[in-house]
Amino acid sequence: MYKISLGNQRYHFDDLKDLLAKASPARSGDDLAGISAGSMEERVAAKMRLADLPLATFLEEQLIPYETDEVTRLIVDTHNAEAFAPISHLTVGDFRNWLLNEHTTSEMLSAVASGITPEMAAAVSKIMRNQDLILAAKKCRVITKFRDTIGLPGHLSARLQPNNPVDDLKGISASIIDGLMYGSGDAVIGINPASDSFPVLKELNYMLDEIIHHYEIPTQSCVLTHVSTTIDLINQGVPVDLVFQSIAGTEDANTGFGVNLKILEEAYDAALSMKRGTIGDNVMYFETGQGSALSSNAHHDVDQQTCEARAYAVARRFKPLLVNTVVGFIGPEYLYDGKQITRAGLEDHFCGKLMGVPLGCDVCYTNHAEADQDDMDGLLTLLVAGGLTYIMGVPGADDIMLNYQSTSFHDALYAREIFGLKHAPEFADWLEKIQLINHKGQLKLWKNRHPLLSIQKI
Image (cartoon, rainbow, N blue to C red; front, top):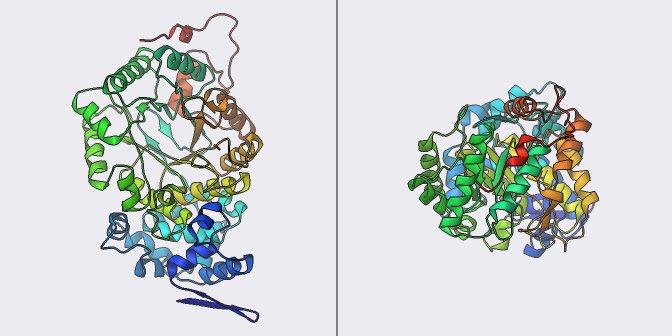
């Protein structure tokens, strides 16, 4: 039990799990689970008690038992004690101060990343203001490679997301053209298929492969289907670049997604065997989101933000090219409004990068949430200020297949212009070569038809 007195009031927290939940900023998901603080005073008390907790406590007390949860076993068994040593003497509050210290460099943060458990990352985020999360995340650098280089300082990439509600190849091709003409797609050209039909999935993979190779685009493709289906595609020789899977922070939640660590290991090995990367071998693409464990009643009374950080431990194991939190996608039951979505996005970005995960964000909301595009503009700007790896590029910011609101090709242009950021360098060279951008990275205006407009259903 953890105790603290504030004035004449004494607060008790049953265990570490309860302390973390009560210290979390307010959000509807934790209210729904019945684990949130009962008052602002109790939340402040939990934050103060948490700040005095030694980081080493998180190696001694597990939120979900080691014997019953493979994610816990992964966290414990892969913890790098040597990397943890330089910060092992710190409390959570000291850790916050160390992260924000101007003398703590990106190199120092990279050196300790594998020694930071998800619970440590989640704990320190709970006592940080938004500006703290932005400043610390800005110093965290995670660089990955496949056909281009993602995550370099001074760069911002975008996933070109050409979804179509009936998987129409011409419609998808039109969206790809649209995105490429705006310089989108250096993170990945990734399709969420409407169908799980194997022939359709094969056709989508072959189409993306031919477009990328015909136009010699230094990027990668991904058809975001279930990992087991992707393994079957690879086994049949279908040209698969990245393997996708939604993941969560508990074994039970991942079971709800139809996956476990063994299946992910099989997929990782299968993708590596394809040897399709030209400059690197980061072959996995994961998506996460606060509330996923709670939505399947697989959270074990752990707060949703800590569950989310635990998902990054799963991702970290497989050295992914890309990971993104689909921050507002699950709905207002878990993140009620623009304020909660903004806070969650900043937390996720900070925790992922702190742990050495190449985190991007789908800056998004559903139409029944108390949020709008102005909220997303604000979150996008804050995340990019904090060194966000990549965002989504959706035609018109409106995904007509998944029925939610995200960011558009224009939003990536805005973010790059306002912060002076560049595309992934190999992709930028290609854009300049085909005369879509100038040497400053600015889009060119074409008076006549550009050769890319010849893309059709291939």
